[in-house]
Length: 234
Image 1: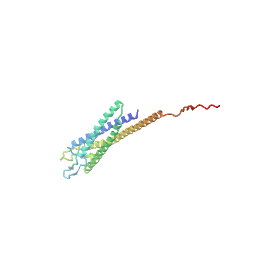
Image 2: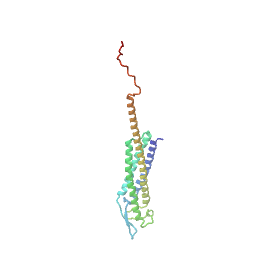
Image 3: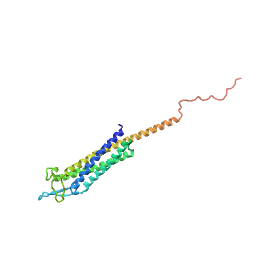
Image 4: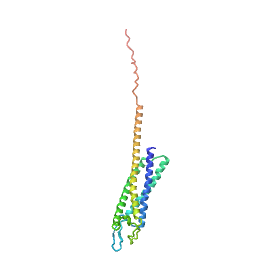
């Protein structure tokens, strides 16, 4: 199998993995916001009440959860488009152009930056919430399903699994898109190498053509004898 086919198959497999991991971000984060009545637990803090044992929450901005959902949706759309585009290339036995490979490299690197920010936000924000939960419960997992905030009427049943899945999806997406960036960069380097070969072949062909049109000088013709006749002696 040619190197181009190996890279193409690797890219398709990578985008399929990225598509699945994007759902691991969007679905649990959307469920979490629905169960928490539109609130986002990322970076949310509060105080435990001694009287009734309830948790008075100072909710953080919803932008944290909205950003992670936005990144997940963006990854889902980009992965879907790339899977379809590369599948068409594979079906038609063609490959992308140099410009398309360059765009893939740039877009993959930009997406890696977005995913890294989302992964750090989920990890640090979830740690902040769990630090508050462990003030009363032995672990953050035990706090799941407890009625800790009757005022906001939040459902804490699945927050630990949902945020854990989103965290896994974010870091897994980051690793996958780093790999996709490497594949796109390898394809770009291959195109650059092929272009250099074409330029070298063109220059060599032009040199051979120029040498073939010039006089060889290998075979020299004899010069004709002088036309003047010798003097007659008397």
